[in-house]
Length: 78
Image (cartoon, rainbow, N blue to C red; front, top):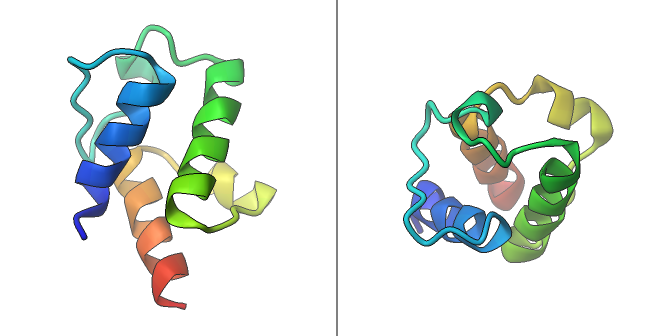
C-alpha cells in the first residue's frame, strides 16, 4: 500500500477537491482551506481510513504530509 496515495484520497474527500494532489512536502500552508477545524476532520478521517489512533503529542510532531505518512507506516507495522 502506498500511504501517500491513500492519504491523497483522504485529503480529496476532506477538502472536497478532486484536483488536490498532496506530496510528502505538502503542509497546511499549501492548502487554503486547511484550518483548525478541517485539520481535526482530516485527523479523524485518516484514523478511520488506516484504523489507527494518533496521540495529541504525536500530532504536534507532524510538519508535513510525509511526516504523517511515516507515522502511519509505523503504527500499521506495530
